[in-house]
Structures are given as C-alpha cells and as structure tokens.
Image (cartoon, rainbow, N blue to C red; front, side, top):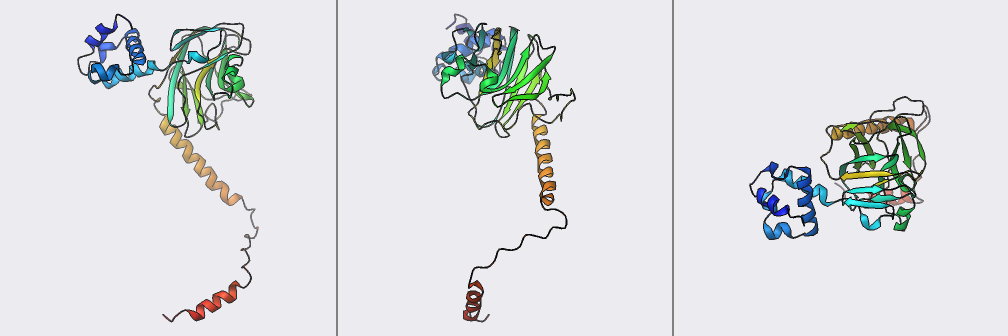
Amino acid sequence: PSPRCPQIVGKAKMPRDVDAVSGGTEVREVAFVMGRHTRLGENSGLLRHLSDDVLRKIFRFIRGWNASLANWNMSFPKSWIVDINGGQRGTVVADVSFRTGIHYWEVTVADFRTICLGVCEMPKNARLLNDKWLGEIGYAVSASTCSGGTAFLWSKEQLSTFTVKSFTSGQRVGLLLDMEERTLEYYLDGERLHRISPDQKASDSKEPAFSKLPPGPLYPACSNGFDKAFCRAVELTLELPLPAGYLALRAQRRAEQAKAAEAAAPAARPPGAPAAPAAPAAPGAGAAAAAAARAAPPA
C-alpha cells in the first residue's frame, strides 16, 4: 500500500466529492489498495463515502492484464500496463472474460512497431499464449508503423480481406464486444470506424469489424505481431461507458436483418411453383375419424 492512501481516504470522506480522487495516479493508488484488500471498503466504510462516479473510476483499474500467464519477454510496470519486448511472439490477456452483455474498453500504447488488439478464447493449453500472436488464436486489429496508415483484420480462421484505419502511439483504441450479437466493434479516439474493402471502397458502415464470434468466454487481449516486434506501455482501461449511438446502431441493424429475412422468405419458393403437398394421412385415419364422429353425442 502507498503512503498516499491515508491522505486520499481522508479527502474522499466528503460525500459526492467527485474531485476527491480525480487525478489518474490517485485513482490508481486507491484501486491498488482495494484490489489487494477486498474487504477494505466493508471494514473502513470507504465505499460508503465515495460517489458513484469515483467508484466507476476506481473499479476500472482493479482489473488489468493477467501477469500470471505472461511470457518471459513481458513486464508489468502496473497491473494495467504491459511492455512486450521483441524477440518472441506472445499474447497477454486481461484477468477478466465475458460470456454475456456488452462491454467497452480502451487501450493506449506509448510506442510500438507492430501491435495487435482484440479478443481471444483461452487456449486449452495456456502456454500457447507464450508463443502465438493474437491473429493466430483470436480476433485482432493489427497495426504497424510500416503499414502506411492501414490496419488489418486478422482472425484465427483466416486473414480478412477488409482493413481499417490504423492508429498511432498515444491514440485511444476502443473495442466494443457485444456478446449478444457476437460482434466486435473498432473505435479510434471515441469514433466508430467501419471496414474498408480490398478495392479501397468503404463497406456498409453498419457492419462490425468482426462478427460470428464464438460464444466465449472471450478475453480482451493484445500481442506483438508475427514479426516479433516490440510494444511499450500498453495500457488497458476496462468497463468504460458504451459509446454514444451504439445501441441505436444495433437496433437499426437488427431491424434491417429482420426485414431482409422477411423478404427472403417468399423467395425461397420459385414463382409459379406449386405449394408443397400436404403430408398423407396415416392408414385408417379416415375410418377412425368417422367412427369417432358417430360415437360423439349430438350437440
């Protein structure tokens, strides 16, 4: 625990005092203490004196990268920051996974040559994380300083023919995982970006970066690239508020899918084709029905 923490707790005793721990470093210090001491809030009454806004900030930083599954070429200055050195491929996952719901998180990176950000399932053998990059075992947006502003969409099934606008050091890369729709959306500095087709034409702006994801659990993840390059100070911030407009976009997408399915239903039978014949009655069914009618009492 940091010697700063008693001072922060003292500041935070004013109810609804959002500015009590508004600084990023101070919020992380409180999160560190609460993460190490799970009963701190219950014992000290700290949770009762913090506003909802402050609590949301704190609990984002309790979760971070899972250092227990990290490779030898990774280091963790903080639990939510990872450095991946070059020389070997490796994937690091968050210490939380998702099966249901809608989740949005952001990643920033101080310096990199090649980096992959996305999601993956946990391999049956977790040691595979130490020798694979994210495009081999999951679903990733892969950016490189040598790609001329273009990022590629990789998945464990195949290399997608679609690309997206790339990002640079210091930008906020947002990923929105919708486990109800099984999709992964890509955001850059808060703006949703759509895919670009191989002929450099924008695809349908409503389409997600990835669809038909597995049922999970899925882990937020990052890695260096297939070139075994470096990524420095990759910072993860989990459970951020959903970007404005996403739920409306999802509702519009669902409505269009329902409309397309309804339009395709009559097209399943060619024009002029006779309707499918009714199933033949079982042998003796007509005689049994007549006998039952005779036996029924008059109304």
